[in-house]
Length: 636
Image 1 (cartoon, one colour):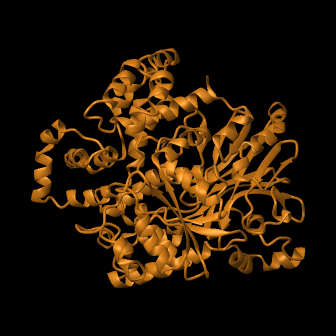
Image 2: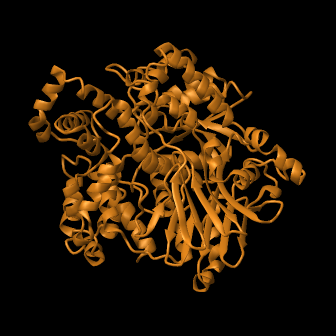
């Protein structure tokens, strides 16, 4: 796992910037604390920071050049099938050059690109972002993995291309820092930024499963090498029992592949189904697996460590529980805010950060259950979507009760207020089209509320027609088909722009590599070729995962509510962080002077925060805190 940065100058003027490669690379230090090197040739500058995982010798450091000196690569990620690919495609090359010089996947990828160009991308099992440069032709290839696990941001100027793994590093190349207020609008709806957009005009993220070719004449190609889609033709291929067996086989292979490492490896173990499956399978392939859990000392309702301990006991893992108080979480709020270099307001980033920080003290690589919910329908919204489509009497009753739920106090912070919140969201969604319902359940505030939040002077810079076109493009996979279409939309929006961003940011802030077997493309392709009934019904979400691995897991982890990470934001905002809100980041004076937000709306949000019916105000306040903290760091 590493960090990459680069610059391609098309003019003498732009070439003056090449000297900034060292400072751009240094901003990626936490992504790669083990080694750092640069390459320049008068029009190209490439920088690399290395977290050594496979072949930890300095011979495998990057930028890496081939034997002829013509080709250079900088690579972030892991290619798990690199040895098989070398055996299949590079034997003649090794004979010609006297064999490989390292035992790294980077060298294999370098020669695959030399021999086959972008055609080799579809052969790769793993996750990655890289730049490959041909000195002779001046051609550069940039590429990103299938589902966007590894980030790659770029800015295309009039006479240069700059790219990097992180915004803070990209900014070191001197790119413009102009806010895109249409993206600000979207950010406050979702609490994250939908890719390929960024918060800055002109900065984009390379799309997952795409490559870009750039040379002395600018961009020459931008194309996909893979497409995830619902494969309804495969729905009749497996009986439910056969599909379970196939899932076990594919998951076992995916886990085994991801255990290749020359440094200590472990696994996250939350006590949920997904991480428990990973631990059960990984235990087949190692004598003693290290496992790690976060516990909640102050909130027994959200503490799942007893379930994690049951799995750890069954598989005799070397299990470590980090049992934390609310103050422990609060203590690391500023660590999270400091590392974020583009507004990102999923508050579960805080426990993710702590889990990665503590885990890194023991291992350098961790297996994770990420992706299981999006691929196999594990969220409450998936069960709710299935129920809405059944048109039952109970549905009609909840829908008819919307005026009642509107009048009730709604928040996540009490048993009954949370029930009223859920009933309200269900009833509201039941009255919408499938596309509008998806969007409503994906967002925290409605479009008109996001518009009202932005100051009247800046609302003219919000292109509502463009936002709607982008929304429709994101929702184009929803065509009144089955639940697999909902999951495909989740892959393209929630997984890509929220879940994977969170894990990448928080793991890299702690120099920890996280691997996700559920996102092996052979597992994902299989998942989108089985019918919705194998995944969700009226009784069970993630049905096939639960049933396939039932015999491998302790009975007590079944048939219980799904909790996930929950941070007591509302309590913090009313007490410990109220000063940060009211006297600093959202003070009336600062908001007025800054001029981005409507001070009447921010003041109303602060009042609602202290009311008996806060709803999801705390989520919007957190999005504002993250934005304001970021804005002060880069603009004040």
